[in-house]
Length: 157
Image 1 (cartoon, rainbow, N blue to C red):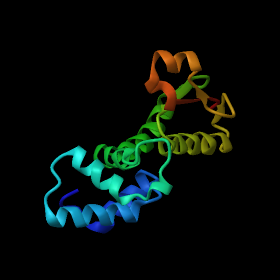
Image 2: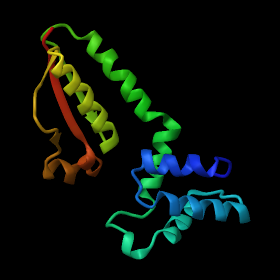
Image 3: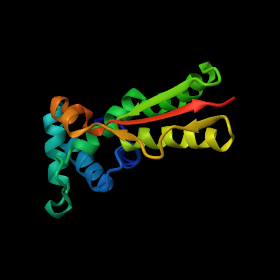
Image 4: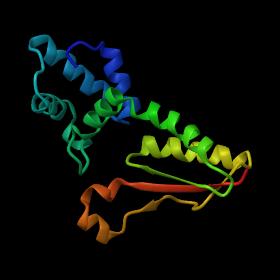
């Protein structure tokens, strides 16, 4: 965050974090780092909170989407999903099942698009119209499961 160009930060927040306030947050980061290097995640979170108007806040912490975007960008998560799906499909024999669990909308969108494209080509049949989600009991036992989405398909040919 201390060295990336302003446009790269804004694009990352908008694309990988689906952050509505990407430009304002980026401006806040750039202004803060001009005064002093950002050295902790707490500092970054405080900058983000100051950058977003109170009326624009939701029930989640204002920095959540920014930190999600950072994690996705640094770990190349979306690129790995796009690489893994065709590889997993190629390993299936006819009748084999492909299951994919995604933990945020960006991953789920890629999984859904891949499965629908294969279904359109007649090589896969989706098992459910909508993704399966954790039950309330499972979420109580495992709060991290609340964002999980399971999609599955069967290889036809």
